[in-house]
Amino acid sequence: MKKKHHHKKKPSTFKKWIGKLHLWLGLGIGFLIFIISITGALYVFKDEIENVTRKDVIYHNEQNIGQKQVLPIRVLEKAVVEQVKEKYPVHWVNIPIDKKMSYLFYWYEHDPKGWNYFDEFPIYKVAYVNPYNGKVLKTYDEKNGFFQIVKMIHWSFLLKQEWGTYVVGIPVIIFVIMLISGIILWWPKNKAARKQRLSFKWQNVKSWKRKNYDLHNILGFYASIFALIFSLTGLFYAFFAVQAAFYFIFSGGSTQYPDFSSIKTKAPVELRTEGTLDKISNTVKAKYPDSFGFSIDLGHEHMDDHEHPNFEVYVKHLSYSYHKSSSLIFDENSGELLHTHDMKDKNFGEKTVGANYDIHVGSILGLPTKIIAFIVSLICASLPVTGFVIWWGRRKKKTVKIA
Image (cartoon, rainbow, N blue to C red; front, side, top):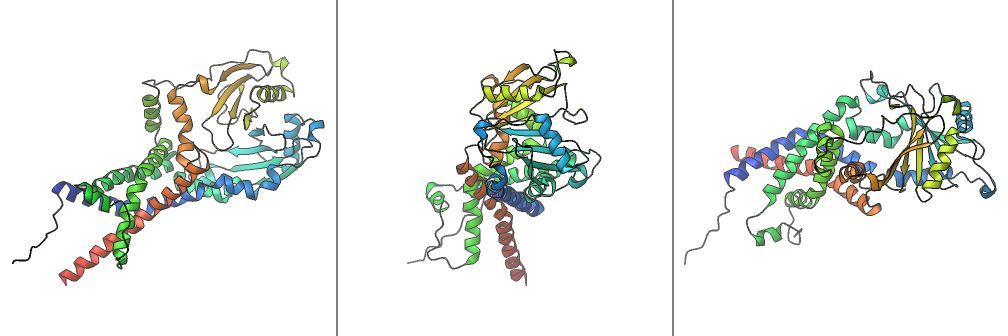
């Protein structure tokens, strides 16, 4: 009886060309994707780590606060300026609803002439302040801090953000193509073969090359849908066209994003006092007692985001994410509330755009989605490495055959 020979079916011409595309794109951008992915993984737990390393200043530990009043914001600002002695003015203040927490005063300047991150942002600094006595508990140089550097490598490779985001964005577009081509290459013709590709079967496998191949294929498959989501939400920041497309699709065809810059000051300048910001702060605290906190731009006209002569207040409702937020416009002279834009006022496009950051960094549902983001980022960082090893092994094999 003749022995049957089982010949491995050759891949179709389509898959053959998809394989070549996947290979050469991977070799071209693999190192960049590794950097983007590993910095993304490092950044995921920033808040959790800083909550531990900064716990002594996040809470001011002032005693008997139920019997005390916080100092006026302008008084606190002056006290901070006197203690820190920066040449730049304070830009904004973050005010927590929890009375036990410190106020955060930020310095932030943007120089559009700078060609790299360090020149483009002369200062990005924060002071943790006891709001009951104005004492600066500690300042942090955020500009040169570990997580900010990691973030800006991920964001623009430390280049000027105007074009550095493109330098990051273009490899990510290619990575999206690779994710799709990878799924095509992974997808088997029948269910039986598909089951074999869904799990590691290493009981009788001794070859490290086989294990490396499985790591690339199986981990890549499971991570692909999340990697695609993180990639697309990242492209949101690199290309305005992606932002516009997101808003257009999820708002049901709208092309006009809400603009509050037309809201003008109504009250005469004579009504402006040192207590105007405190009136605003008290209004926000009364309106959103269950929120996490809010930020107030201190209104220095030289700031590049000072779009109109009013105080815009951003309210963050959750401690772990930004997607639930409100925007309020106050008259800069009287402190009167001119406009409120709550979650209920936003269309689905606004909510989607507002949730983009939280989806991208994995904070949308708190710790569970952060863990997913961390694991997927590590897998994405591993794909160029395991992919290169596969290519190098096959290359050496071909060289031996030729010899």
